Image (cartoon, rainbow, N blue to C red; front, side, top):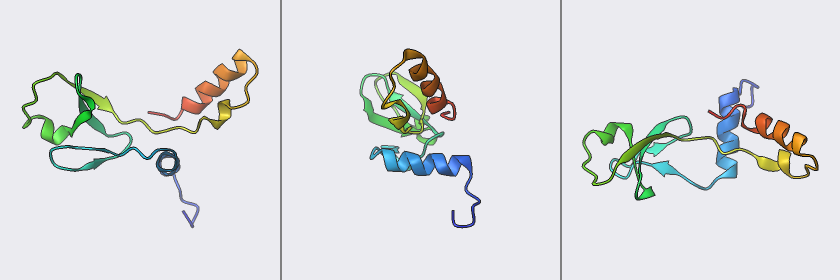
Length: 100
């Protein structure tokens, strides 16, 4: 933000929106879901059928539903020019350390 009060979560959300064009939402109520929120995803239909936690109890879907967190997209450029396996592992841990 302009005042320098941007939190880590704000930065993660900004990065997420820059890196992905994927939007998660509920097919029943139309609510857009953000990273760190939970959604129910069909085990058969997968990403073709996702609903929010509010609509889950009122929905009758024929397949098993799984509760999943929406993860932040991460910037993988830390891994672009890695030559050693050790460096790849260390950078991978750093890359995903803030992902919840």
